[in-house]
Length: 114
Figure 1 (tube, helix red, strand yellow):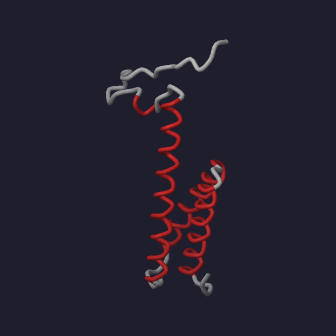
Figure 2 (tube, one colour; figure 1 turned 90 degrees about the vertical axis):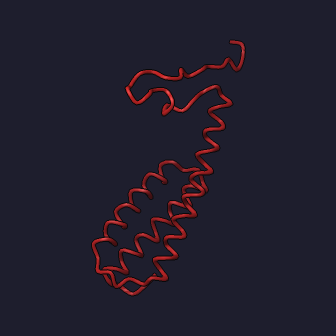
Figure 3 (tube, one colour; figure 1 turned 135 degrees about the horizontal axis):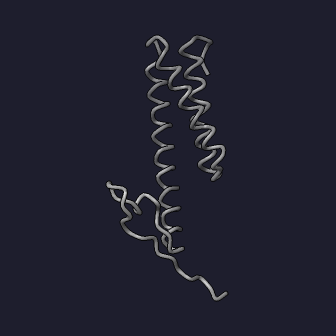
């Protein structure tokens, strides 16, 4: 953390939000992920509104942390897609076409006899 200044405070908040986001991704905590994402957006807006006298090295480190979180998020999304496919489900994004008409219908799969 840095000395107190508008830019430093905004970057501190951003760093905290990015670390919370990473923890939520690693722990598969959807509620914490939503909270940390909101905190990240607020911190980014604060950082954008402050003077540009920020530390370039710190901004680079925070950008790298954000990229690493993005990679982890992509991995989690692939895991969810894989699980849905194996359960016979499809993601809702593929159900409707650009005109709002139903495209590919979700397929259901019987997993057991009931």
